[in-house]
Image (cartoon, rainbow, N blue to C red; front, side, top):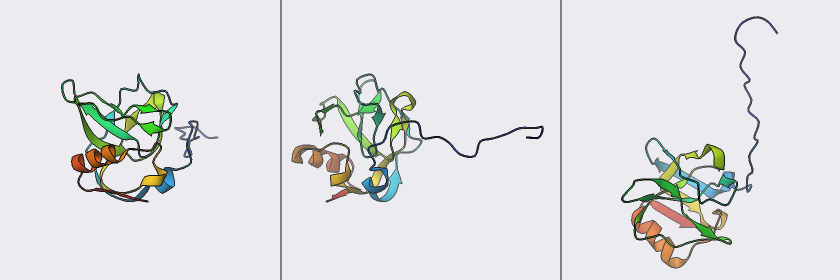
Amino acid sequence: MGKGPYVYLTSKKDYPSNGKDQVVWRNKLGYYDGGRTLDVSALTDVAVYAGHIIVRDKTTEVCRPLETTDKAFNDIKATDDIIGLTVSTVPKDKAFVSMVTIGIAAENALPFTMTAELKEKVQKALPGLQFHK
């Protein structure tokens, strides 16, 4: 190798994936500007997966992944706003994410299931977001 700067043009994927990044989104039309860094202190998974619902505390404005139990999203707290769904999987220790606010998501490919009530709340908060089976 010669003198001067050297850059690796490939990056190693060293974080887990649920294998669904390529199928969660059928169409992405609108994004939450600038993305957000997340508080992942309550996250039990090793990553925030594509399609995870992101909420923001109305008082502190701290953003975090919506909590889950087993394989389902928990209901949203009264103190939170739904602000988007993650574009792609990111490792827990690098939890800065881009979020889709307008688009079409494959509901069956989301990382966790959601109740009909939660789905209604997501669609009310993000009216440009559709879920297809």
